[in-house]
Amino acid sequence: MSRKYEGLIILNTKLLEGSVDDLVTSLGKEIEAEGAKLDEVQQLGRRKFAYASNHLESGHYVNYFFKAEPDAITRIQAKLKLNGHVHVQHYQRVA
Image (tube, rainbow, N blue to C red):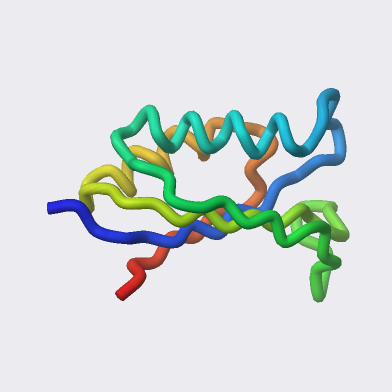
C-alpha cells in the first residue's frame, strides 16, 4: 500500500562541480529508482545552521514529496547515505 511521504534533504554543495539543480534532479531520480513516485520538489534554498555541523556552516534545503511503499524508505535512506553531497536526510509520513 503506497503512502505519501515528505523527505527533507540538506545538501552539502561545498565541493559541487555542477549546478545545484542538476544535483536535485539526480537525487529525485535516485528516489524514483527505489520505487517511489515523485509528486513535487521544493527547493528551499541555502540556509545557515544554528551551529557548525561536520565543519559546515550552511546547507541547501530541498523538500521531496512522493508516494512509496513503507519499506522503500529504508532503501532510499541507505542509497542516499552513500552520496557525499547529502548532509542530512529526514523522512516523515504526510497524512
